Length: 101
Image (cartoon, rainbow, N blue to C red; front, side):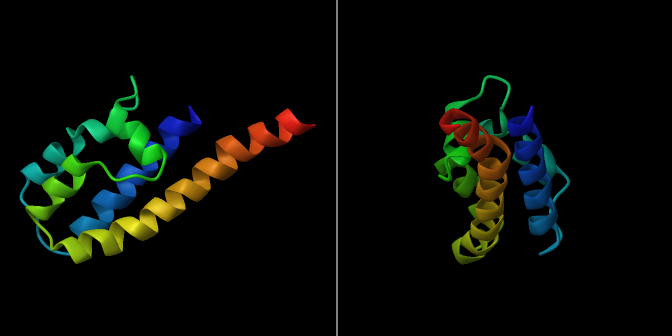
C-alpha cells in the first residue's frame, strides 16, 4: 500500500510540476497516465525502475515531446530524490530496523 501511495504522489507531483511550466494539451494528462511506469498493480518493469531511482526511456521520450531535456531532468531529479527518500523511510528503513533487531 505504501508503494502505491508513493507512486501516486510522485505522479501527482510530476503532473503539477510539468503543468505549471506551460499550457499543455488536454491529452497530456491521459497520455502521461497511460505510460507503463505508473502501472504499480503488477508492477511493471518500468515502475520498478522508478522505484529503484531509474528513469524509464519511454517516460523521458514522452516528455521530450513537450519540454527540453534539461527542463525534464531539472524537474524529475528533485522529485525522484524526494520519492526515493519517502520510499526509504516508509518501506526499507522500517524493514531493515526490524530485521536487525
